[in-house]
Amino acid sequence: MTFLPEPRHIHGVVPTSPTTAVLLCNLGTPDEPTAPAVRRYLAEFLSDPRVVEIPRLLWWLILHGVILRVRPAKSAAKYASIWLPEGSPLLVWTRKQSLLLAGTLGERGHKIAVRYAMRYGNPSVASVLDEMKAAGVTRVLVLSLYPQYSGPTTASVVDAVTAWMQRTRALPELRFVNRYHDDPGYIAALAARVSAYWMTHGRPDKLVMSFHGVPERSLHLGDPYHCECLKTARLLSEQLGLTPTQWTLTFQSRFGKAQWLQPYTEPTLRALAAQGVQRVDLVCPGFATDCLETLEEIGVEARDAFLAAGGKEFHYIPCLNDQPQWIAALATIALQHMQGWDTRSPVDRAALQLQRERALALGAAAE
Image (cartoon, rainbow, N blue to C red; front, side):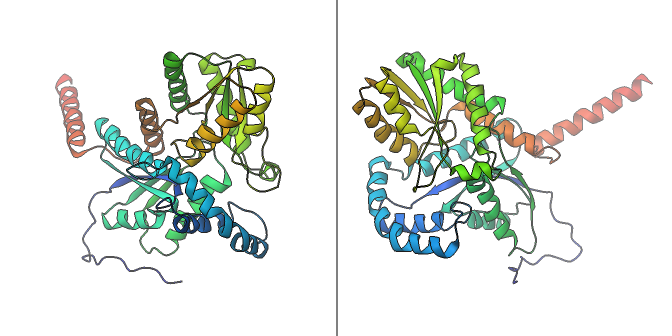
């Protein structure tokens, strides 16, 4: 194995004080809403063995023989329908979150750089880690924007970081945030988002909490995702003061013919409409940013399914995105996982040292 060369340093000279950074990681997005760009993105995403756990040769034939020939054009049209002037919503919101998180950490007196990367697509995890090293970063907290742990998401980010580590000679200190599905700040931010929406639009007959689905097989193999989704939903319902009949949990984005975690979102919405439920509000607690799966799959397809089945009103409640309470919670989560790293700004560090010296002086005078 060949390791990349490091910048030359002067023998015997101690490096400067440690520099700390947070790497926010999201799933990823095509570079543009076109079939070629979507094909490149899907090829990378669906080639990850964490995402699709079937024999590699069989899956390669299916992926390149069928899926990448048919799906890119259809998906590109969907991406085009939700694309923003600044680019992909997922990328736009992730970028904003990184800027706001850096600002919040700075306001709390910490000198911490914040960068963002995509597990699939650009900017890649490896390229951003390279940039961090070049900038002198020596300690990195990898903070995935997946509140609930799962192998295809959280563990895949660790895989990407590990692959980068395997070609890097001088490694920074690394820490990972695996989950925050039950973090009080995260739950409170979700509840605030829903409550604010209801203050403006009134309350529904039923609140549906839709999480991204995974194959049911993963649950039986020990993946904790299903249980963590259930806990998030329960905590959110309690924070909102809902009774069990006022909310339900579902799983969306099923792919292929295998059994996935149930109940499925669209069939549940159709069943609610058939039962006479007039208004449904839907929130996606597992998504930190709005993206194709929330804006198009839920905001368009799920809405159409509910109304076509006889429902009268369907409201999609946006993701946390740049909500201030969410950014504050994210900052708290980051700082909790950086305990032991001195991340205070030089000004705050000097002020603290001055306080210590004054305390020592007062103590000596008292004696």
